[in-house]
Image (cartoon, rainbow, N blue to C red; front, side, top):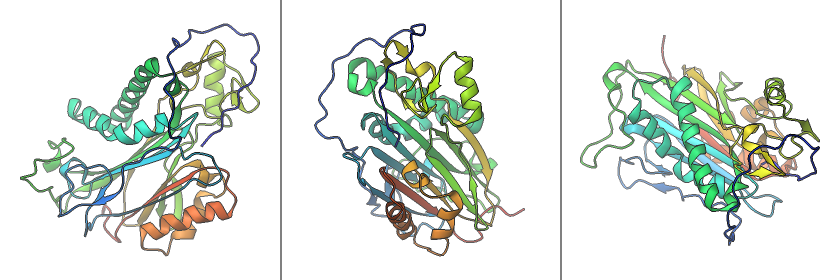
Length: 348
């Protein structure tokens, strides 16, 4: 979670301001997350944060902690058997700043935006088209909400989303998030390939353990990233005090639709995601989604090594969270671990 430190700016050209909006009182500063439940039977039907017993394709564990912060502004979400296909899954973590509102809203709605894009553009490239359109759609909704609530206008969040997708010609026509309750989710054919599509803005990461080697599948969008510095300077923006316009140390986020001292923050802190596509192999053991409360005090490889021998993803996520606090992280910590069964990746 990235701290916002207001400061006076030099007299630059003014940019259009977001219209003022009434501020709705925040009765609770902690982000609300839908509780994790267990499906009564074998079907989850696209229900957010619902686990399925005896899921042979992957197991999920989530742990979170507020730490020394006054509020908890992280949120998360996942959907098992996404699109009505066994073995598919959608996983996400959002790390709020300013207040909880953007992260809380994203945690409740991210899966709906992916569903819409997949239904409207079933043949689109997920990495190059679907994910960017999904993030744009989410950011547009946050912008509309910001017009009515000043608290939402000053809220933003990082995001890391991982879509574990099963690809096969026989499954190509299935794009809905959930099947009717009279039908069971489909088991993919043995010939199906598995891919992990990832998208992120900000410094929340997805890290894959491949043969015990950590492979980062996201990019930190911070003021220390060379390409981001160049992009902001091309827009005639300034980075000083280690922050964009002296305000935020992130260069990409969802939300942040405010004007700060006459400057449109969204002109510089954009919501366009970094995206990757990774073909899973039998060497892939698990992947981790976590906010910077973990990565500020632990390298990718240290995280992989710490939990490598722990088969229970819930215990693994707790180990990472607890280690972050042992190493004196100053932030909220949210960790999701998705454990893949041995030798169930794509065979060449």
